[in-house]
Picture (cartoon, rainbow, N blue to C red):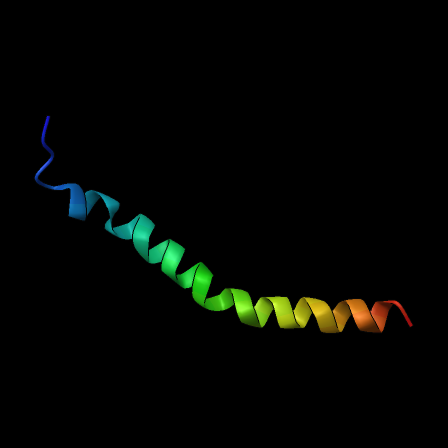
Length: 40
């Protein structure tokens, strides 16, 4: 079984995963800061 258009089909999902992994470090830092503020 082959799927010649697999790149086109998975492209949007790949872009979504890339966008989320790029944002993760910033969100993790923000979460840490908010946790620190909330614990005071």
